[in-house]
Image (cartoon, rainbow, N blue to C red; front, side, top):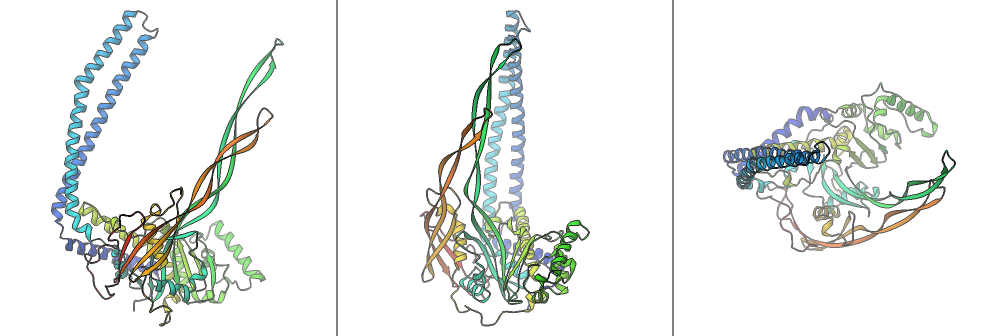
Length: 577
């Protein structure tokens, strides 16, 4: 059994960061050794390629110089012609001779000096481009055996080695989803609804308790403001000092706005964790950034509000356990002070405060923490900007040294982001001490893809494969599955919107004292639904005990049918550990 993590920040600095760094190096070396890439040959090719690229950059700079010189020369001729035609040179023969001499000089310089230089540089640049293209093609060929061995599960295997407390699933199964829904009540929380589609999911266990990192695309209707304008003219009359009247013309541009419903889409990433500890406790904690700012006015003001709330008899179940902790980690809306105290012991409070204050190794106070009975949800800001699809294309490259650096940098950033998403849970000792019941719901269920996973696959292919021809917005993709043995035909419905142009007239008071109708063009949106299909094949031939090489575990995606609305996704269900 893996040792519990009670001080996630300290453990990351002392243990896990360096351990994962070593694992990434060893993993890359292992894959590289299997690929049998000629590293020295690749380094030589890349050296020649970068030299050719540098030469091209130098030639481009020279080209820009000569072209700027040509522009300056002809601008000088144009300026000379302007002054020649002006009154500065009154004699006809004078301006004509000056202009002719200037043009002759410009033509001679351009033809004798500038044009040959530009032509010579263009020739050299084309030759260098050909050399660089051949070298790059050769470098890609040299790296092809290595690029071919990258697979979707590399990060999962390295994470499991670095942090044994975290076990990752090959993919999010019906079993895992049923466990979270029935045992822990995820379905009662209503995460995935018709205006929400799963873009990515990563599931597994923390000390035997289930979790899923879920990225969703969400849609909501907001109001969009459109603007329009109209120019009006009117005439007024005023008397001059001599008593006569004169007309004065006036012009004014009237502007108007009109608001109409508009579909908005955004993505949200969160960690959902099931644990039976404190099963009745409910709270909603929002990031505040107050940790470490105990002397600030904001901290003192918030502490004052919490003290008043604790003294209020209508909130008799709320008691401040520790003022510094309660202010920085505000859960004053909790429904059970007793169960909260069982979770957030003095050890948990100290660990959480260190996590909230730290921005050197972690991300500081950048997360919301919600608990709804047995479902815990962490919503970290740092996960919102990271692409977590683990696509092996992130690692592919033509330069061995750069590929090694990118492989380590990308995976170490992934590790840091995911580790500190789990860190608030690690701060709570009871979450690691309580294990789930042995006979949990759905252990004997087939490990088929859950509908979350199917939505993620549909979103992997993208809206364009399924959207309605008239759709002009993003889409929310929902799926319906029909099993055919190990295969499944998945019908994908793409919910989007078409638009119709409209014009509304808004009454605006003008400077002429009259009311004018200002036209405002806007779009009205109507829902449309597109459909398509995916064919899923699940390969269950691998057992969790098998140790598979990267070559045997290459890619999840094996083939795509030629039809726009049909895709094949082949899953190898094998150990990620």
